[in-house]
Length: 238
Ligand code: SF4
Image (cartoon, rainbow, N blue to C red; front, side, top):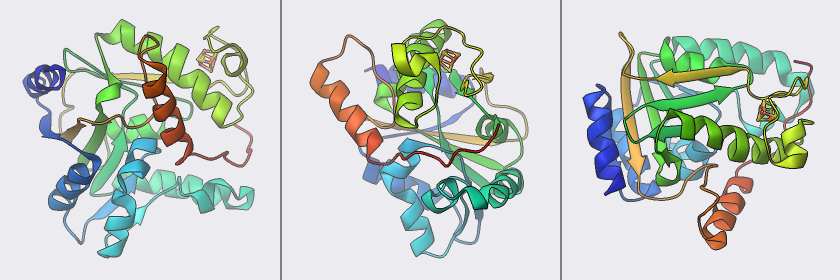
């Protein structure tokens, strides 16, 4: 019911919507939307890694620009390559990424440290495909920001060994840390002009997000699935 309500709200905001039951169906939908000869950029997203789309696109020979591969993010000597790739993503045919939260009135809320992911979502690639698990749905923008700052960022910081206060306390203190993750906030209220934007709503938990009132078994599964596709990036100066 919640997904159907959300789907209608997103459509009213001019996003193209696909509602699917599973991550496998999400992958097949993306393969049907992306031409084989397209150049595809990737925004850092546990959800995108979890659904297995990267491997499937590579298997069929589609060119991927992925600045967030394990190879590039764990080797400090590859930092410049990674940064160049991040810039090249802006001129790709398609960007595939996730979102931190989606609101029931059809807005996408994201917070970034660098900003390359959210910038490319807004302008650059001709087509943007955003994969969203059901656990990313929140009531409104306030609820989205509360969850991002007090659930997602603290856990993300802890997992990736960022030295933010929230990694220790689990709560946002609007820090001045050099490792601060929350430097750029975007709210996509409606589809931006000149960018095709497709949102794939998946009726599964994907990526990092939960409501603290949910059963612990569900939260633990979200955490362990996230940790399975996440690793510590090599430390580079901001
Ligand atoms: S502003 Fe700082 S303390 Fe707050 S969530 Fe972001 S990184 Fe954590």
